[in-house]
Structures are given as structure tokens and as C-alpha cells.
Image (cartoon, rainbow, N blue to C red; front, top):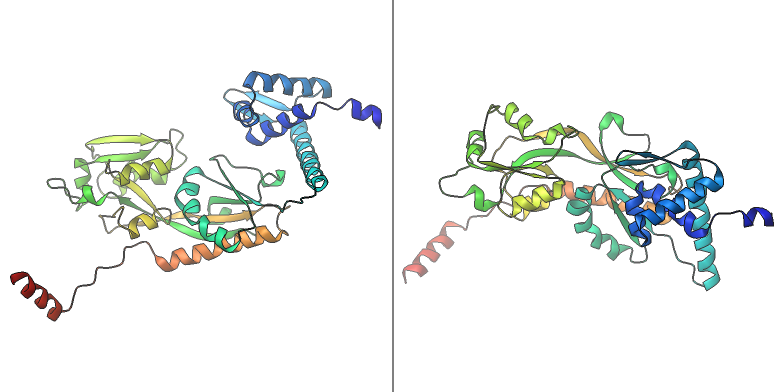
Length: 332
């Protein structure tokens, strides 16, 4: 036993394996551990040499765990967590587990983060870590407790909690919609405006492509006044709010923007996506009370969102006698 312990790789090297396997990037793992990318790469190579097996497949602009690497990464992750827990106990301060949520960058920015204060008010003792990344994480690995995924309804796994569907529509700043000489009353009017695009060279999100929307609305050959492209959807919406152009809005992600008037939807025609947002709980996290509380909060927020709706409250007209009194006061 003692001989086997002496043959173990350095703890720092194992932390490097854990971080690289979790981030699937030597560069991001090195930044997290405050070492250089080349130093981390040498550490992981040393572990692979000591084990006599490759842990990672080093692909062009990509990194993946080998089957042996995946099994070793799970074991190392569990062991490091056990060591961290033992250290907390030794210090005499057992720290309660928090909740790690995985979701896309844009959903985190536009929907989750603006609402987190309500969860913190209800459960101040539960720490929440939002892991915003546009790659799909493996819930079996144990790094994430809850994931929010955008899936076709038929593809949702058993046990997934459906939060809501999604509705699409063009949206813009009120300043653009009301601009003189550039009305937005019908789709053809988009020729006078800049269109804001989500950059999608691989065609993974065709439902957010302006070409598809224009073709389905009778303007397949429309040439806009200009185009702007962004890598993330929350950047598209930030540009729309700033009056830089017209975006394809996604409800409920931007429902609050419509309710408070930061954005308006000039065209009456809207269409529903065939996909919905689902909350998935990792197998190892399902029985933890704080995870159950967080998922219940997500469900309550979805119900709250549905009750609020996306449209701004109608402006109520004053009764005739009040309007008359106001006109009389103005004359005086």
C-alpha cells in the first residue's frame, strides 16, 4: 500500500488532469489553475507517461478524453472532492454543498442571472455556481448538478422537467421603430434597417437565421441596409437594445425587455419553435435537498414567467371627464 502511494502522481498534476478534463481545454484549465498552458501540458504528459496510457485525444482545436482518460478523470474528481471534504472537516467547518448549474452563456445572461436574487432571498444558505458554456456537459461526470437544455420535445430524456417553449419574432428598440422615414410596419420595411445576426457558420440554429424568417414571410430576396454579426445571442440583444438594428427575439429570454419597453415587436406574426427548455438533474445530485429546492425554484420561475407574459401592459386611457378636466386646466 505504501509503495503504491509513493508511485502516485503529484497532487498538482492530478488537479491539472481534473481541470483539463472538466474544461476540455488546456488553455482554460491553465487559466483556472494560474499556470501556463505549456506547464499544464507537461504535467498531464507526465501523468500519462507514469500511467502508460493516453488520457486525452489532442485534436485540431479540440480536446477529448479517451475511454481510459474518462474513467481516470471520474476517479480523480471523486478523490479530490473527498480530500477537499476531509480538509473542511479537519478545519472544523463542514461546508454545505451548493448547486452547480450548467446552461448556455446567453440563457444565463438573459434569463437566469436577472432572477437569481429571488432564489438567494429564499435560500440564502445555498451557494449557486452558474457554469455558462455553450458546449453540452456530461451529467454523468458529477461536475454539474442541474443542466438547462434546449431540446426538441421528443428528444427530452426521461425525468426532464419542461420549463417552457420558445416563440420567435423580430424585435427592435422603440427609437428605431418610431424613426421618421424608416417605418417598420411590414417585413418589406426591413430593407431600410440593419439586421442583427447570430453567427452560425455550421447551421446549428437555422430557426434564428434571418434568411429563413424572410423567406417564410414573403421576402426571400430582401437586402437590408446593413448587417451586424455576433457570436453570442445576448450580444445580439444588447445591440438591439442599443438601437443598432433589428434582431430575431426569443421569448421568454427577452420577455422582460418587451414588458419594460426596452424592445418592441413591430410585426404581429410570431412563430413557435419546435424546441423547449428543460431542466435535467444529474444522477448523483437528485437526492440532495438544495438541488431539489433549486429545481423547484426553476419551475416556479417558469410558471411566474408564463403568468406575466411577454407583452407590455396596455396603457389605460383616462376617463372622458378626467381628460376634459385636464384640457380645461391646460387652457387655464
